Image 1 (cartoon, rainbow, N blue to C red):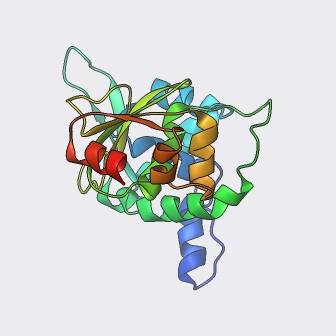
Image 2 (cartoon, rainbow, N blue to C red; image 1 turned 180 degrees about the vertical axis):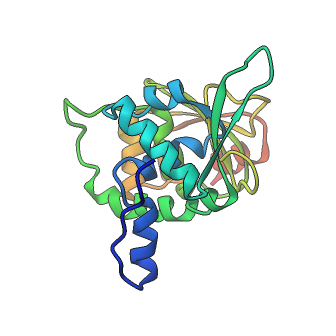
Length: 208
């Protein structure tokens, strides 16, 4: 394990960047906000990262107290990585970074990879209310926990139980919501987001 590089500056911002400033580290945190993930799953959802770099970053993050690694019980018997409490404290940092970076989210370039769940944090920022929300895009399905406290912030695939609301929309609408060009309720009223479900959150979105 290589020694951690440092800016050697007595400043909290510099100290924070000593830990999370390396390329890919914060994106690994983004993926682990969905809960424990296997190495192969992380590699699949971080297109462009090499296996060597990913392994190195995960070791560094474990050393720095951001993640832990554990073995699943049989029949899984695979190792998974998950955020520690310290690592989870980066959620508001990622949300703020995403809000700041939304202005850079122009038209999707031909070389841009996309995963449906990458829109989870922008939608969480834009949603009002609390509850389990299932989101369906052409690129895939994910679910998120609006107002989540402990536990995962979002997850790949359909909601594990009956959600409080189901949203169907396209990536362009997600990007517009991320940039603040339209609110979720405005997009619902304009027919850009279809809302189904009998939960309180679904009713609030339809009636807003």
